[in-house]
Length: 353
Image (tube, rainbow, N blue to C red):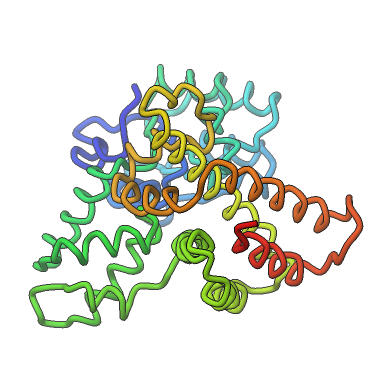
């Protein structure tokens, strides 16, 4: 049986817990919430709980833990992380054990944080394991929330805390946390501590407390680039570089995020020029239509940015991004220092000719 994380969190494990659970998907906040719920409802004694990582231990240890009987409680709960990294032969062995689990064992399998590539494939979990758990237990899908789903999650957090948040504060909070419950959970805790006994949370509170995700910082950076404001763009770039860590680590990711943002702007520009019919031309990733179905609040800003960038300008931007990528990888001649490459790129992107 397959259910969404939201559906599982509403009902919990129920009166008859499954023998095996499998959590997968890119929404780490939802995944963490489901794991906490499973721990709270399944674990009766800490001595009968085991946590293993599929990348760190041999499969024989995982199987031995799963087949062991509990010592001090009615059930033994075994959590296994990183199941997308199991080898094919290990998957075969694990599937064979799943159908033979002792009645007293509850096996909880879940993925490490999943990459964009794994998300594009639909699931990081091998199909054989997914099908086995679907037949014998519960598959819990932790997929990115839609805009309505994330706002519903946010409202539930506010209600539990006895707080209200103004509409403009909600919009800003969603933007700054990139619609990720994993990020938003921590930031919400900070906001609640900041406002104290005050019942209402305002935009100013959010602006003061909430940390900017790199995605939010890149959006502001591209905003300045779209306006041709080189001074503001360079200032924003330095903010990202200072807060992000070593340039060698942050610049490749930053370059990828800027390129992704320009692909979205190209798609938005096509929609402005040709209407919704052009969505058939959109790539699988990033796909503007799919993104806006999850994060509708981005549409206004993306449209404003795209209106400043004709298709010819966007074409030139892609050529500059491609050149910067090749130079940084040492394929083409030029300055290979990551910081200098990204600084030159931002200046070039701000130019209109």
